[in-house]
Every structure is written in C-alpha cells, then in structure tokens.
Image (cartoon, rainbow, N blue to C red; front, side):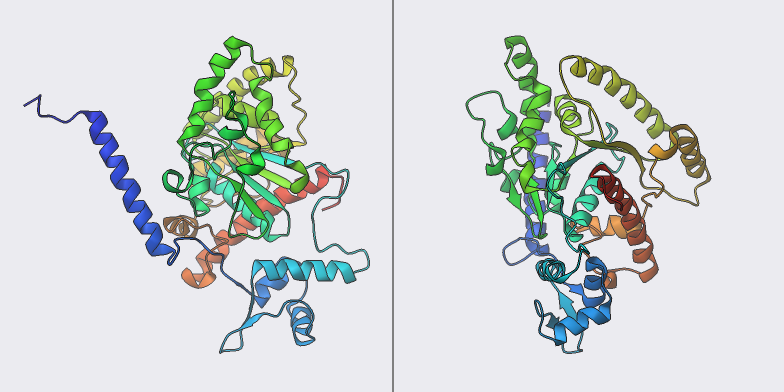
Length: 394
C-alpha cells in the first residue's frame, strides 16, 4: 500500500501544474482574443475630473476640434482613452499661463521610490501598491511598478501570468544577480495597458537572490547586496517620476534592498491585534537590520514614512479602537485616510482587475462610490506627500 502511495512532492507539483493551466484558460476567457488586458475608456465626466477641468470645457474643446476627439456612442455619450486624456493634458499645458496639467517632476526633483512593506501576508500590500501605481498613472505621472514578490500578484494583476509570460532572467533578479547573467533593468521593463505605467514583473526566480546573497557575502562581492536594487533602479530614474515597489511578505534581502533604494516607505497594516503585533516585530527587526546596513554605508534618509490602514471596517468596534491606538502612538505618521474593506475591490480582483479598471456599472453604485472614494483619498494623500518632498505645495 505504502509503495503505491504517490510522493507528496509529485502531488504538489501536479496540483500546481493543473492550477496553472486552469488559470491560463481563465485568462483566455476573460481577455480574448489575444489573452491581453486592455484599459476601459473613461466618460467625459471622468476624463474632465482626471484632467482637472470642467466637463463643459472639455465638451467645448471637442466641439471646437481641439485635441483628440472622443468616441461617441449611439446614445451620444462621449468617452476618452487614457492616451487621449494625456494628449489633452499636454495641449492644455502648452496653452496655459503657468497652470500645470502635467504633474511630472521638474529638473532637480528626484524620482520618488515608494516601498510598500510589511512581512505579514494579507496586510494589503499588493492592493495598496497596485492601486497607488495606477492612480498616479491616471493623474499623468510616469510610473514604474516593481514587483519584488516571488508570488507575483502585482504582475498577475497587470495581465502577465508569471509561469507562462515571464521567462528566465526577465525579473528584477536579472538586474541584481551576482554572476555574468546580470543585465540592464531597461531590458526587463514591460509596458502595460495603462498609459504611463510600466512594470518590472516577478516570478519564482526572485527567490534566487535570497539564496545567492549569503554566498556573495562570504565571497566578498565588491558591490554590497543592499545597494544592488538602488543601482538597478537608478539607471532608469530619468525615465520616471515615481517608482512603486511591492515588497515580499518577509524581511529578506529583497526587502532590505528595497528599503535601501526607497526615498519613502509605506507600511500597510490591517487594524487587528495580531496584525499590529506582527507589525511590531517587523519594525523591531527592520530597525536592527537597517542599522547594520547603514553602518556599512547605506543612505537611509527617507522623505516620509507612513502607516496605511488597510481593509478597515469603521463599524467594527475593535478595529476602530486599534486605529485610534495607532494614531495616538504614531500621530501624523498614520495616514489620515484609510483603505476601507470593500466587496467592490475583492470582486474586481476575481477577474484580476483593480477598482480603477472596472466601470461603475459593474457594482451597486453606493458600494463602488464608497470604495473608490476611499482609494482616491489614500492615494491623493500619498501624492501630496510626494509633492511636498519635491518642495511643491499640493
């Protein structure tokens, strides 16, 4: 009986392969005919809000033949793609007298590198990173989303299935590895269906960096491990206004590299006792490890550090108490706005989408509006912190 029993490694491998095939088939069903995602168009009201003008003025531009022309449905509804919205931003800025419609950084303003961290799974890191990157792209920034998590959820959200679409040496690992296979990060970057948003994808090969680094430390590699992520990202800094790094749920060499590359840090936390206790351990461990790398020469002068309350339920008494406790302890370092727990966000995730990708018509209007308002408030607050770091008034 025991001899005929399959080895557990074979069972796990078979289950993983079967699940991978089913997910690939699901992707083909969701995003035919080429199994690639595409961003929806935006109504004239949404477009005007994104640009920062009145809908009536946008209509005047359209009727006057200025700028890209919207698609007009049989019912007379006008809609714009994100590329068209960005064209309109350029047009308006060229004709404006000092008012900025393109928020991109100016000479002398450094590229913002925002590391989204916590080593407890389920704290909302990927949800926070994905929505922040897409929000900033919608606002007109040039954004690079960097997936440092071998589980590659951020990669999957942007239309790439890690085991099918991402080959060997096609992740950040390719730009930070220790051997002759190292390549420039620009060769790894992929475009997305979001205009202005590029992606450094992930897959399981990122784990190789965690395995290679101890050996490299013993061998005395000339470039320290904690500087490799910063060096790779620095080679692309002139192409982007902001980089959003989705870190793995562990305090390993990849996360330490991301913390050393960051100009600012966002720490996600679900307001429950076990999650806050876990965050406490993360902070203590991070402090000890970062002190060591700082003594070794790392520059850890952050523009800001903020705690992002995620999956928050205001009607939950203990959660409300926990948020109040955190605010009394960390004060302004806790973002004023919270990311609410919402069925709209989780339902969008079922089809590998974010709330910024799906239309209002797919949900109960109140549910959608409440979730979107929450996301926009959190991301607008982070945007304001970025602008202050550049010396601007938000």
